[in-house]
Length: 180
Length: 176
Image (tube, rainbow over all chains, first blue to last red; front, side, top):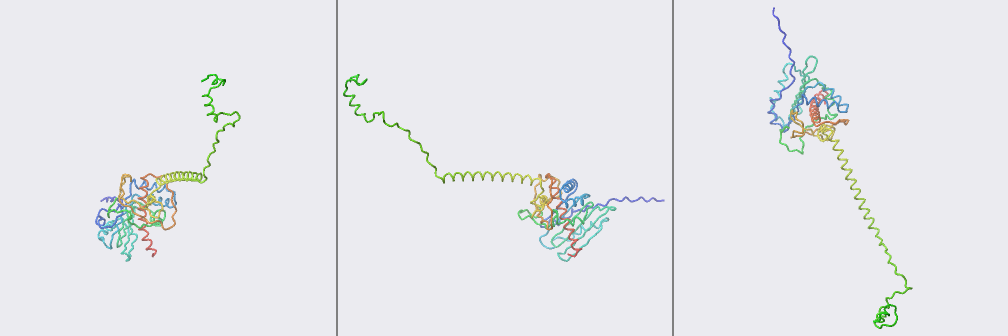
């Protein structure tokens, strides 16, 4: 009698690797890179909970289980200045088991493609990934842990989470692609 | 010279008599009016001179009060600004700003995943975020440390971008 040892079910890793985006970074006019996890995230969540504002309280509740949030945004001077293969490298990671595509938007205007992926561990959401590519910009968002996406989208534009229009501060004359 | 004439005017002395005659005009008479000390009358100062002095003093007093008030208000504003996230930035300052509270333009420092306190870092680039278009209630921020402000700003920036991209999907679904 063979005893089939049950394969241990490893928790899927919802963390996307952004290591191979050097090509995008070198070509982009400006780059936004935000990585928040660990103690920095805990500190930020505590501050968010302290802020005396209804929306802040909602956001604090929405991100209470968050373990990390990673953002990459690349803006280019001209259209189609980046290599689509660089974007596919990220999309390939999201084809791994565990990830499910929940939204797929295509628009010929600005050659826009938006994909939203989620990963669940049982009934708990363990990660979210958003990939947005347009003619002149590419954006990746990777959220580790459960997060209320509807609330986040709803609150965008309120409460100091404004609709973002990333622009370089005209008063600064920093060289492009320079990160902090 | 006869000493008796000089003593009690007995007899006569020609030289003394000539001297007396020449000084007769200065003799003190018993009935002459007494000399009165001249009265000192103060000179009245012209009116315009007094007003000018008063005006100058009043202007100096007003200037001093204005300077003191400005120092006090600037000092209290600095105390408030230090406890509020980046408002002149998205950002998150105050946040968004630093905080980042709602501001016309809120620059938010952008950096890599660096947990060092902001005081040890040198910001290379700031990202201006547009103000909240819809009605936004100004949040009240508690007393925050520099590290807390930094962490909050970073989180709000990340959530802003995430929400913005998610809204692209929602707008497409709604057909906008």
